[in-house]
Length: 337
Length: 262
Image (tube, rainbow over all chains, first blue to last red; front, side, top):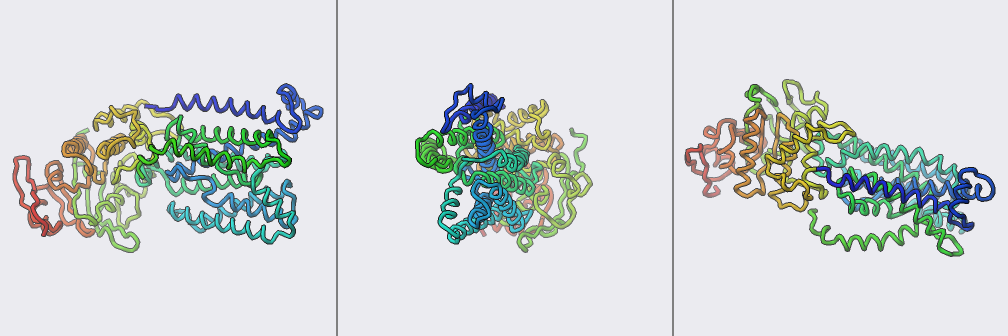
């Protein structure tokens, strides 16, 4: 009767172990290669050059990769649960685009360099404004379609605002800096980036996880879910706000990182099945592992300019996703619309 | 459970529903009593589904609906869900979840937020699977089942909540003749066990065969409410459905035979 429960438990344990291994690797890899022992010693005592590299440079980056990856994976799984559609992804409601626009504005008009804290703070504010706008436009009791359309409009508007900022950037360097920043990167992020964004990630996880069982009832459709006692309006609101807080903060500190939110839940469903409640935790763990791995990969590729992690997730993510669609094609085509 | 037979569980005297300005349900008066299977019949677009959704508390309606003698609006969503099980039209399942997991969703109003299913929940799920003869598919993804099989799983989900009131919107649609009878027998048994059951049924013969009472809806109004013999007359069938019918007596009660559209 509890299909997949044991698989889920094993998968979660395996993913947690994988994340630990990847985190250690992430502390070791970079221009100055460190052995596992040196990296761990640096992490624990914080002394010498190794201590500085590990604690001040690689640790924030590693933790951010884990937190952001987990947030993207969880947001994707939650939105797919809410919309009952495996194609939903975290950028759907416009919060990441609004965060990107606000951050770009800060960089463009000389208020800050791309690594200063003003950028993520503006990004978070932008994300929050977009949530407020969405709730105001769509209304508290809005249907899913209205919420989606309002989100689409906001996302397009924020995208246009970013284009306008690039267009009006006072000098080519600012435009280039924005363009690079938008590609998504965890390079040179400090512990401050972590402390300002972490509360948003945690709030997002709580809001999304609280809806786990309600997602499950939605497999029967909205009417049946409501008849089982689920408050649909409250669920929509908490999910939209939860996704916006988490993904808005993620974009604010790291720029746009695509495909993890879409791919992680798909990967997980192959093992734990389609129960939208049971997908959440493994999808978060998979997202964390994917982003940490991608961030290690960008540091291992020899290049004059470090590859941006958002570019890597998209480059690897798309063919991977296509391959998955092909292998599942028969299943997808056989499924009811 | 027969002690409560005849008790009024759900009642309304002047229920009206407007959707986008149009009056869909017009001052409906209806009483659901414990131990009774009611068939709600009427042509397409009569407002049957809207009436049932309003009775289930899913859409705003004007007029008082009383559940156990108290206004339905005073119940929390969870308490309401424990008292009224609702089976919507269509039998949709969006994710390929296992049949047992789908049926267990019927226990949602009874479970605590983070607790797994209790023994009572499991027993109820198991009874629902057995009653609908779906237990052999318990581990199968529900999306691999045929339309008729899904209809039975959907019914099992609604039965699993073991609510005293069951509102079913076209529970026999897409079922073969045998399973139509199986489902109607199941609903009748549920009523005999003390539940108040209201089912929207399109097949007048099935309605006549199984229902204790038939309620006829036409253009938003309830135009007849009584025993199959009282309600199913050739005149009324002609008036409401625009169909010419003869009423045969088979020994199992009146059996309308429809022979041409008017």
